[in-house]
Image (cartoon, rainbow, N blue to C red):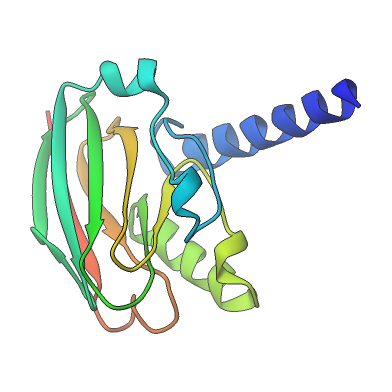
Length: 163
């Protein structure tokens, strides 16, 4: 039984590394089911401690506040999401191509809560969640919500990564 559990953990970590490498960030979060307050997604404490900046972000129905951030390349940032909306939201970090790919993946899934990777946090209505992310590439990236209809409605937060 221990061997099976270990293999499961290895598979989850490998998936997170794959997503982070593909989308230009670093896997910096733990994973839990969206909407499960008892196991909300939190950055691993050692990793969160390495963050040079903490940013609180408000999620409302179809918006993030602030709606734009600027960070320095190579900085590790702890992003804390507070959902003040009436429905569950998610925050997915990635460039435009990654956002489109994630939106397409989410559209194919019947159970939105089952999508987990190192660049995503699910936050239930009235709840909070966090992830810690290292911004490795200069340019533009986004945080977006891919719950049904939210991305198309403009639930995005633009991030400019400067050198």
